Length: 204
Image 1: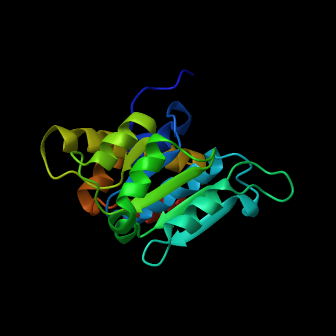
Image 2: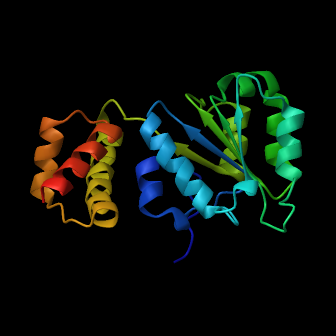
């Protein structure tokens, strides 16, 4: 299947068809849905080269990480000939605030073939960093829209994700009417909905 040229996607859509999206050198995972962010992280690691080798994964704390150390990790390769590194900077807001200029330069001129994943609570689209990632990487949104067309699209994607999750992870069929009822009864939070699908699968 051909890859899409989209560089900004909601996390639910990404999880439904991750191979359609080009990651580039930098991926920003943005939003306050912690469960969805974790699912995105697992999916990104699976997408990266030799993702099953722990030596290719590094997780850094954005509150204490230094830029030079992150770049060094991105440049390293497995001692046993594994694939390129995936470096996840969690709680990356203070990291981006302190090293914004260096990150912007790296996005435009990557110094390695590794993947830098920035987990952020926000990334305004009018910033230079957001625009640079839009050109060379991928932004994955992990939040629930408040209203309007975005909320309608989110709800549609959420229903598809729930049906796919029931089938692929729990090996049960979740009919569309059951999904509609579930969304009427349960808060629209991916982590809670996932647990409910898990519980329903056990009942089946």
